[in-house]
Amino acid sequence: MAEKTIRRVAVGFGGDERSLDALALGIALARSAGARLDLILVIRQDSAFKQEYPPVGSVVGIIAEQAQQWIAEAEAVIPPEIRHHSHIRPAGSIAEGLVSAVQELDSDVLVTGSGIGFGRIMTHPAVTALLHSSPVPVALAPAGYRANTQITDVMAAVSAAHPDHQVTRSGESWAGQLGAALTFVTFEDKESGPARHDAGKGPDADAGTASAEPIKHILATGRTLRHAVGTVDWPQGGILLIGSSPLARRRHIFLGMTAARVLSHLPIPMVLLPRDPDTSAPAAR
Image 1: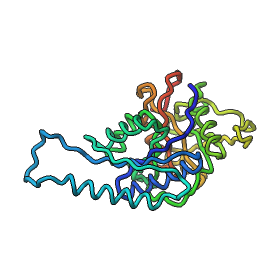
Image 2 (image 1 turned 135 degrees about the vertical axis):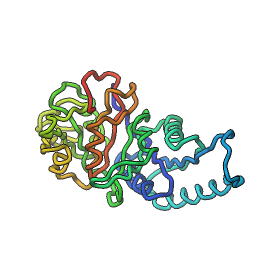
Image 3 (image 1 turned 90 degrees about the vertical axis):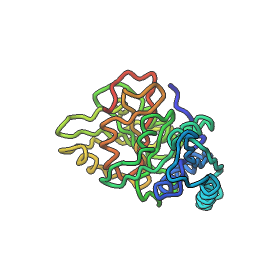
Image 4 (image 1 turned 60 degrees about the vertical axis):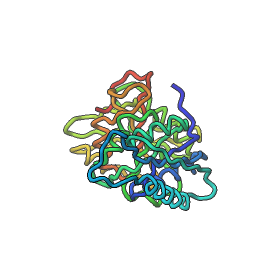
């Protein structure tokens, strides 16, 4: 399957710290790809059959006013050279509203804050729902992600055990579009052996991307996967691409066990890729 060009970057925004993390990553991706940035703020729309107790009256106007304020604050942060547009959408849930918006806008990647810093666990239900349902890649910004103005390195989690090449192809495509260096990373922990990712063995180290930059290949080993992740010198301007579990529907994402374990210890953004319908190799579980 041909890789999509990164033309539109969607950012799920809600006015909190996690949203500011997502906005910073969205700006970096949009700037590096020369893409348009779409801010999406979802307003929870309760069912008309749900009875509130105690009765509080309508708060729709108050919520809409707050949403407009959050959007204005976000737009003030976006550099003037980045084309952008804002969207406020009502929906039954945050995840539902974001998925609907990216489908309507034909977004190429959805950016959200993970609420995860180094060694922290993801707990937000909206993020969890997105990681099991999005039809486009989901880029997760770690807690406190602010400083980077562009993406300098694309890291791709690949497996040495299977011939499938989804993440290999995606890594080459993303690195070329973002003007970034490409590095393939294979994780191996002593307890469970080589980690299984939805990707294939990376190209030879002396191969090159479209920009003729040399490709590095790192074998990250440790007693546990956490230790293996900690052995990598993650670049400050880097992102890590990783494939979905085989449980994912075609062209949808599903966070597998290995990806979740890597995510909880990763200091740079992770991009979870939808399952390639042409792939046949096992993915991270």
